[in-house]
Image 1 (cartoon, rainbow over the protein chains, first blue to last red):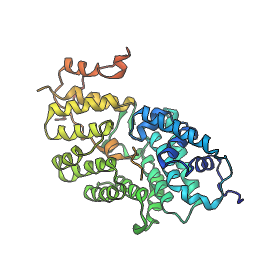
Image 2 (image 1 turned 45 degrees about the horizontal axis):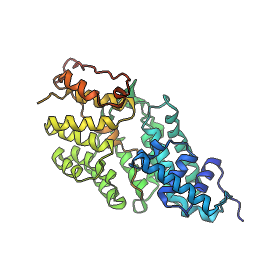
Image 3 (image 1 turned 90 degrees about the vertical axis):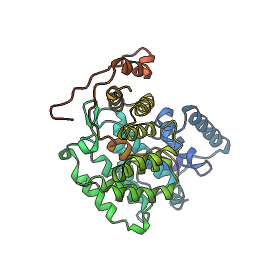
Length: 304
Length: 57
C-alpha cells in the first residue's frame, strides 16, 4: 500500500471521511460534523435543508459506514483525485461558516483561517488540479475584507466599508493565484474567485459580475447562484429584472432569498411587501449583525 | 455540484443601498419583533429608532 502523501493530519482526515460508499452530500455532511465540528444546525443551514432532514442524513451515513465495515486506513495517493470534489466542498463550507461570522469575535470565525490553511495544503498537494487553487483564491479574496465588514455588532455593507482595513496583500495573492488559472480551465470555484476579484475593484463592473454568475449558474444549476446573479442584475439593470429572477427560485427556507426579495421590493417602492419579506428574513437570521440590520429595515418602512 | 450556501458577497455583503426613510410605526415594529425567536423564548429584543445623520435624504 502506498504511503499517503498528505502532509497535514486534518486534511488527511477530511479525505478519509469523504468515502465514495456514501452519496456526496452525506460525505460532506459527515465530514463537516466529524472533522470540522460544525453543529447539525450549521450543516443543515449550509445545505439549505431542515435540521431534521440533516440529522436523518447523518444517521443513515453513520449506519452505512458501520454496516460496510469501512476501515479507517491510510489513503493511497492515487485515490485522492476521485475524492477531490467532496473535499473541496468541505473546505468551502468550513470557510463559509467562518465568513458568516465576525473576525476574532467567535470561535467560528477562526474557521475561515483554518479553511484557508487547508486550502493551501490542498493546492500544494494537487498542483495539476485547478479547482483547489480557484477555491484558495476565492477564500483569500473574500477573507481580505474581514476587518471591515462589521462595526461593533453592526453589518457594514461592502460599498460602505473602509478599504484601508482590507488586507491588500491577501487580495494581491488571491488575484495572482486566479490569474494563473487559464480562463478555459475555470471551474465553479475559480469562477466564484473571478467574481470575488471583481468585487474588490474600485468600481464594480456589475454587468461582468452578472455574466460570470450566469456562467456559474449554467455550470451548477444552483438557485443560490441565480439569487446572487439577481443582485448583480439589480445593480446593472434595475430591480424589476432582478425580481423576475428571484420570484421563480425555490428557496423558501433560505434567509437570503427573503432579504434579497425584500430589498428589491423596497427599491420598487412596494413597501408593505418589502416589510413582510424582511420579517421573514429576520425570523431566519442567526447572527446579531444580520438581525440588527434587518430590524432596522423593518422599523424604517412606514406602514401603508 | 451540490446546492449549498456559500460565501456570496452579493446577498450577504453588497445588497443594501441602505438609506433612511421616515421612522416607522413603533407598534408595528414591536409586533414584528415579537416574532423573533429570542422574544418568544423570553429574551430581550431591542427596538431602536434610527436617527438620520445630517445631510442624508
